[in-house]
Length: 266
Image 1 (cartoon, one colour):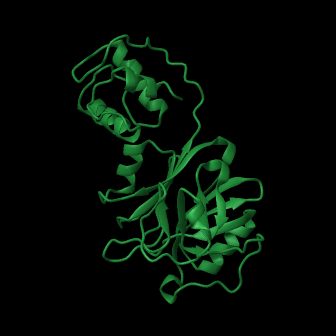
Image 2 (spheres, one colour):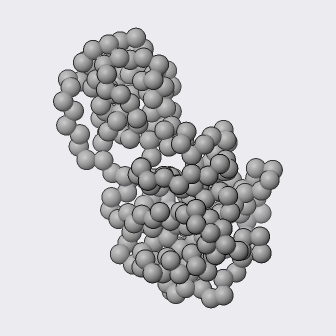
């Protein structure tokens, strides 16, 4: 399973630190992201291996100086070892050098070798984000060659061997293992022509009718699964709470002016 996504179509790339030990499906439903893939390696005590950085803070200890991806926004997604300069950073096993040439031999711990399911993230010469995830047993060298054959100029092997999992806009690879962190990608949304009238009052649990359909339609436009049935019941409330949490709103389940404004930001 692979995807190439033009950076011009990407709204946000973020690292999700899975402190709640949720499944991939739960995280995708909670956040409304379009793409999700397992992140970097982590230890048995649930500590991530260096370097993992989110919102300018190191999540991992004792950083090593390996090449990975740092970024503040999709516009400066950069292949680098200078993690200090970026808001977010993730690395694992680099597969290319800084000039876009494949590395040979690769440098990785013996525990990361062999043929096993693999996942990776990269950037193509056409300025596309490259995501790869497979259940097929693959060596790091084979993974590197797959990325090179798909026009990648840089790339990092992510955690594998039981952790490889992803959902690429509906195409899925599952793994039973709960992992420490994920990489989430959100696409820019086109303006939505909602066929239902916008409510002029707050919507709450228990409401029914055409205004609730407006709410459900907007939630779907943001990537949240929601039946457009006009009933603000438990399922819709759960999605509203997830939306509010992801948008840093008051998580109260009430769709007032602030929540409605964020729903319209598509």
